[in-house]
Image (cartoon, one colour):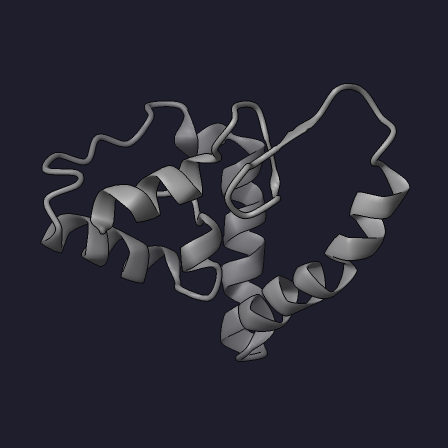
Length: 107
């Protein structure tokens, strides 16, 4: 599936995939043959099961991350050579992050 990027923080994986399909961004979806045995898949299943038992869990995880992000940025700002997006200021590996590139492309 699609990774959630900044503009899609609060959308589910299914909503992102639907948007991508409707906009023609991913005409074919081929899942990685190793996805079912990956750690990420185990975590996804765990979070999805938790969401079924306790609705709102995913939303709360995203909100918690956004709340602690300024603290993490401050704590780890001296580690390595991280560049920041010239448009939004988020950490990235180029002058402009992928999220801002996507936003520009979508217009």
